Image (cartoon, rainbow, N blue to C red; front, side, top):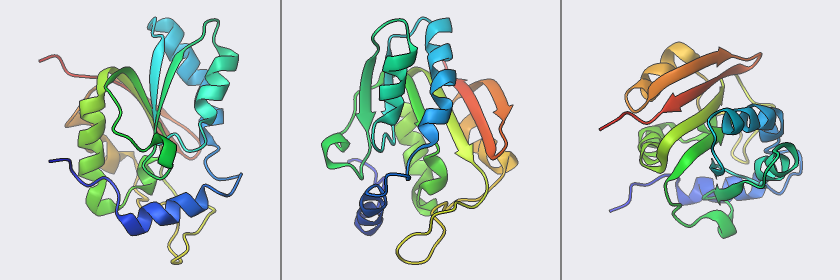
Length: 177
């Protein structure tokens, strides 16, 4: 049986937020990093987990010297809500801080099943500018890397950790069986 990744109430809130053209823009900032990882690791396909408007894929198509195979997954976007297949590279850019705290382990376990080789994950550690319809800050989890890293290290091998102005990004590898 599949684990719950998002409540129906929260899915509806996220769907509404995605109507705002300025919501879900962080992937544009990280697209050059993802492109660089793809080139260096000789990866041609990516699963954009929490794809929102699909901006990462659009930008990768512009940045890469080849046409990447881009898969999208976002439970709040009906056309991208179907269960994705595992992929050599999974990105999750400014998504995890939006996850309902009681469902975070389910989402991280889901990512663990989908990462076939590598993952690039970014986390914004402070409050968001946007507010949910119920008055909560859009970043439901506001924790620093000391809190986040053990959650990742339970599931992945850490290749690289890098601070950003608003949080951090990591490059991880699926542990060998």
